[in-house]
Image 1 (cartoon, rainbow, N blue to C red):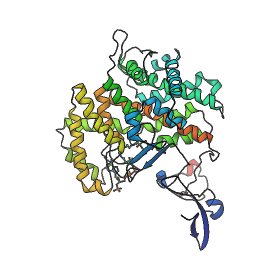
Image 2 (spheres, rainbow, N blue to C red):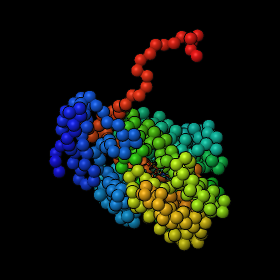
Image 3 (cartoon, rainbow, N blue to C red):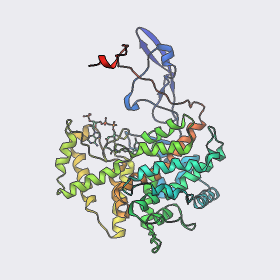
Image 4 (cartoon, rainbow, N blue to C red):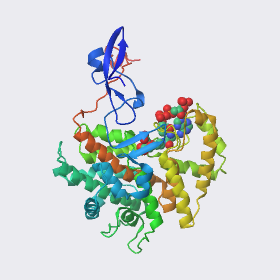
Length: 430
Ligand code: SDX
């Protein structure tokens, strides 16, 4: 592999350094391109542009490979708890018994919100989308830890913010759900682990304790792990960009929640179930929907299909699909939406339009079916995605803060507007 790339512009030759990876894409360093050539690059959506070096997650989109700190996703999903996975993503290694115990106990100690925060929920209409409340409440958490909001917090201070966010996101999410159904908030229990506590705060009431069922905890654990991190996706890039201005971790994560809410990103899981429900209610004529998705004059898309990086089956979707069958068999339930989803997948995978564009089911295609089987409403699905993705967001924010290469994110543009013209007084405007 040569050490430089050659660029010829207007007859002048420039040598650009190559940036070696341990595996995957090699980079061409254009950090001095404008000063050397007076030119910039243009890459809408950044499909060909690396924003940083990172050692957290590796994806191979062509082969459908996903590894957290080098460990294949299938192994992590089968063998780890969500708290172990969060530790691996954030600190780079699987925790020892003692490290895991300390991490877990810290989550138990910090699970409940300051009582004043309950008032914040009162101002929201119960029809408000939970992602609006989640983003606001995460940013509001910063008001309770002013001593941590330094431009350059110490590792210990970042650890404290990590614990507060990881522990309290469950409580905030459960509160958004309770708010939407008009039930009182439920306090976390010291004797429950991470996932069981979330289910308890979601579904227990003051008069009835929710019965924790192992298959449900296991299904939710798997989903949270599968959403743990996904390198430089839209919301993670948002967290890194906001953090690059020295905004605090709470504010950066709050911005990530907003980016994740978009239906093209983490909001897709809610849209998938709404799409499947519409297909079910109209007699499951999936052909009509497939033809609409293929029509270039129709903005309609089949939600849960396609991916910027995966040009093969999303490995997470494969694991989630297998979990659907396990959970339904264990719970003795069946959701007709799963039959429609499988029918839709089979039709899409045979269709040339989707094959030519390498459009496969992604992580959002089957996840909502499991959330629904657990009793979680569709507008809460992006919130569950956020709980799973939080350790990844935190890991990337910490990596960005620690990197000597980090500068405030400020892209350039190719200007295509008016060159220069005079101000026109209002009486002369047409
Ligand atoms: C996530 O980046 C990540 O890692 C994200 C994520 C993570 O873990 O963080 O994996 C989570 O966000 C998964 C994606 C969830 N979104 C959806 O399911 C929404 C539906 N899918 C898309 O809109 C789309 O596929 C994206 C947004 C996921 C990817 O968009 P790209 O890479 O910009 O691709 P594109 O829009 O340029 O599409 C390329 C072609 C186009 O057709 P042509 O113009 O070439 O004729 O494929 C078509 C698109 O019209 N296409 C689809 C389609 N997705 C792409 N056509 C119909 N249905 C679809 N779902």
